[in-house]
Image 1 (cartoon, protein in one colour):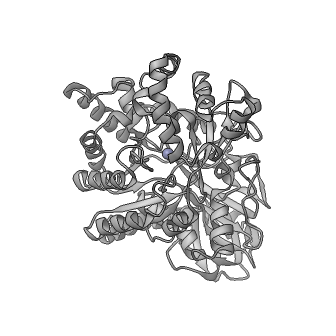
Image 2 (cartoon, protein in one colour):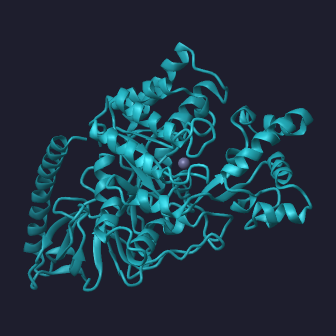
Image 3 (cartoon, protein in one colour):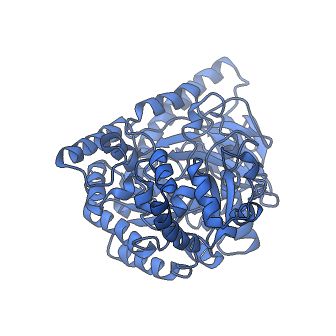
Length: 542
Ligand SMILES: [Zn+2]
């Protein structure tokens, strides 16, 4: 968005907040007249180092909260009273983190997992769901499930291309007819009207894989009619599978140019040895698109390993068509198996070999979870390719894929257009395989990349996790510490904040968060998640 546009948006939002505050203080004054003990504020956070979510902001200040808003930032009189006063000396006070790529849904719409505990312990107060083109075409059941259970954090829905394409065309590998195209456009429009913030795509995955750029452009144009809408994409190729990572970034830029809306490369990475080092070209491409006036951004989880599935990591696209039954049939047909095997050998090399694949979930034999593909093959006296094909016949597995180079991770992280994400799912604590990012991405960025490696400054890490994200995705009145903003505020200890989850033991909460306020209420209090939930579903235009 243009700077002028943002200014206007903020002014009008601040104006609305001021009106709301006047009403609020009037009520408080009336209450005070009846009861002389009524406190001035709900919460005062005193003496903390405030990072306000802007690129450079850092100062000592008090922060006061009343209702669901921040009402004062600065020096608050020592005689002021509050229901809760927090001594934040030695602590950092920042906006709650915003995760633009979360797989918390559908779990966050269930009674069991609505609390979003691993998310809160990272200091995240807002998550954006349906990334990678995912989710269903009709958002209404998802939204109502999440609202009904009151989520622990704020939730922002997006509308996914793959969900829309699956609804209209199933999993077929062809271009849409004119009528199918019109139906897909109608579904995107309906979802935006229902409150989606923007359009997500995932042309790496079936069925988005079978789309061409013009299909994505046309659907992105529907989203672009709405203010502050965007296109966020798990790009077609993060490696050298078909078009290659650089051309895939080029495709995302082209969508922004033609559909005239911001484009975000989600969990940007240089996947596999064949593209290591290409972050330099990627950065140049993104910077020149930005110089052209396009709004191109990226987000990233701070790990050198991704999470994937055996199927998408290894099987060629044509062999994935039609779903599991079709895959099994092809792998059991000797001729097709030989063809698939040949292409899988190349894909295995792209993923840095069988030692670089660790099983997270394998329903057919959970005893293999936590083992690497080469280990399993050795135990079975098999070639790893045959082991992988046998596992694919039995439904496939979720994997951790060690495929990135730390130099690319850091080079990308340093860019002013880089945001933080988790790409994490929300599961039951201790249950099943997981990538540690689901528990640790945001604290890890601070611990490892700010405090230990000094790759970026603390202010940049906070900005890339808060204010920048709020601006890019048009999330009004969040992502910043300032009067009138929603009180999504966290207080953490810079000496102790860290991720605890590892690849081998991923189920471990992050530590260091003393307080996490969601809409003005302490969801983490004295370092512990409370039983009540304070999140909201945030919908466009509401
Ligand atoms: Zn993805």
